[in-house]
Amino acid sequence: MGSIKRFAGWLSGDRRKGGSDPVRSTITSLKIFNKRLQRQIRKMESQGKLAKKKAIERRKAGDIPGSRLHMKSCLQFTKWSHSTENFRVRLDGVQFKLEQAKAMNDFSGVAQEIVGVLGELQNTVKAPELGKILSQLDLGFGNMESMFSETSEQLEISDDASASGVSDEEVDMALAEVDAELSLDTREALPSVPGLADTGEISDLEKEIARLKSQRD
Image (cartoon, rainbow, N blue to C red; front, side, top):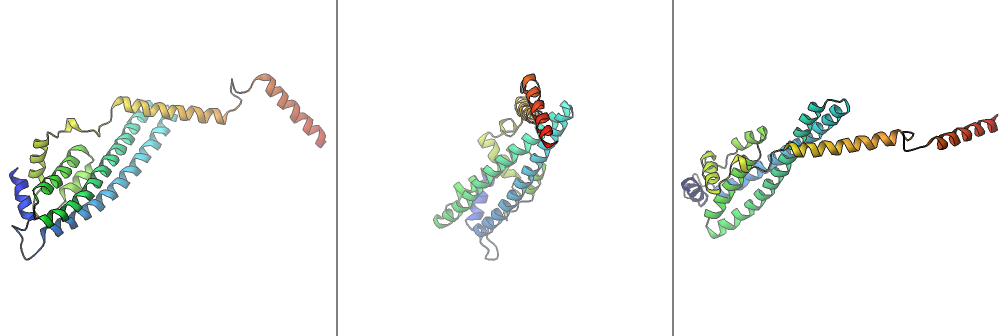
């Protein structure tokens, strides 16, 4: 845990330059990063809705492979947005813990937690844009990649442990719901389809229409 230990030492002020406050600098950087995560979550939610719309359109057109492709994309964006929101909330808590650690002058635990949350986010959410903003994150300490790798090895975090993948079964279930909704919409739009109105009811309706016409005449 050499990199994280050095990070904790930097937070404590051991490497402070020019009278700057490493804790305040880190909190400010995390707040900015958190805002960027919020914008990214909204973007992923929007992309997910668009993908679902396309999946329904392809389903209506009879393009089964196309509908599966877009539905998988919809589910992926949804999972990414939910996972990112979870990590964003955890980072909010880390900022509060930094203040507490500063009062106690003990940064070993919070330093590991910061790197742990960011490292899990990197390994769990594989959205390209999220990877980009992670690579741009600057807490003032330097490159975070070595610490991410160090923490991932210690916590045995791997791509295989990711909960943000989408399975074929999940796509099948989502498309089954779409099929059910489309079927319901069709039945509501066509009340005279077989099973919803028998011949006698149609005949009675025709007679009533004729009666009303005769009254107007």
